[in-house]
Amino acid sequence: MARPSTQQRRRREVIAAALEAAAEHGLRDLSLTDVANQAGVTRGALLYYYDDLDAILVEAHAAGMQRVGSERAALVAQQEGARAKLATAVAAGLPNGPEDALMRLLYEFDVLAGKSPLHDELVQQLYAEQLALFRSILSEGVESGEFALTGPLDDIAMNFVALEDAYGLHIVAGGSITLEDAHRAIALFAAQAGADYMSRAA
Image 1: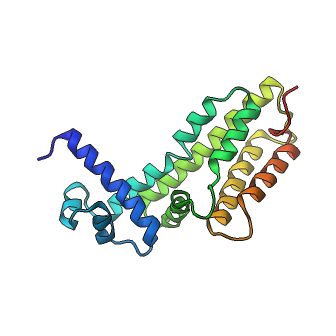
Image 2: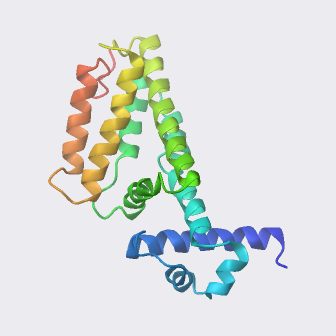
């Protein structure tokens, strides 16, 4: 049996392969064979580490969440002041464009919600992380005097998450809404909500 460190490395390699294969084939058409081919191993080798394709996808879903979850929170924590933190949170939460495979996958994973309790849990976990991040930034802005919110903090935080998700979906779909459109519209909402992050601090 492979040693724990080797097992962990190989499991990470499988997850990376699964994300790449899913980006190429889409979740609906993805097969265990696709993941095995991407990883350069046999189906049997994959099943040594995971029970089935869904087990791989659950772990891949969790890995993909890190980008708009823990990794974004770390970027925000590096900033000084609520305005800079909010600008960073918005920028890091949107896809880079239609070619952003990982963000497109996160939206596809949302489709699995309702079909798998584990995916349901991950979708709810990510939403909670998104909401908590915006609530924290808005609270800091109110306390520092950088923001003068025009409505309930919780509602404004929810709207940031909703706009991020809605515009992000349009961006990865390659529709008429571009990344620049999303940035402009979210910045406008922020200003109207009393959380203008585009203006310079006084």
